[in-house]
Image (tube, rainbow, N blue to C red; front, side):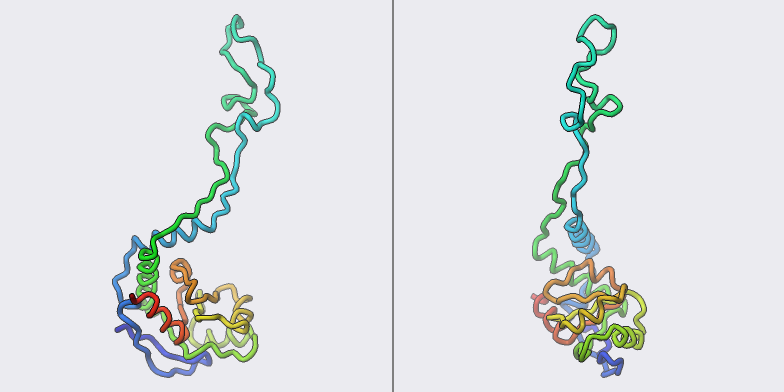
Length: 208
């Protein structure tokens, strides 16, 4: 079973904690990671890009010259895609880029991401995130005390208001709920700190 450090948020070590092999000790499937990250990023795209077709470009209502007898190519509008100032043929239109992945694929990607980070020594479990009151300075000091200066993901079953407010002004720190955890968040972070409750929740949710 994978063994990760068990600490409290004040940086006092409490030993080690064993995590489930079925969630934190599987062989990472890189294709599942790719699909899950691609789906997440596709869902974030606004898809508001657009170009004007010949029917949307202003002007060009009059035929530039008669059909025959001029020696020039026939043309019906000065706003056709071949002319400067004309419309765009087959240009991008507003669309929804999001797509769905099967539940088994999403769970497999989460298991792969968690196992990859655990194998790299990037997973830590804390007893609980007990900050008392919102304090960005205190949270920053505690994370530095744990030796975490790169991107950090804090995962709780139900993130408290104090934790969210303490982390929101730290550009390299993100707070996530265990039920809404995304593969992209795990892959983006270098360190993942799970509460014991969140670790148990993930083992139950992803272990089956």
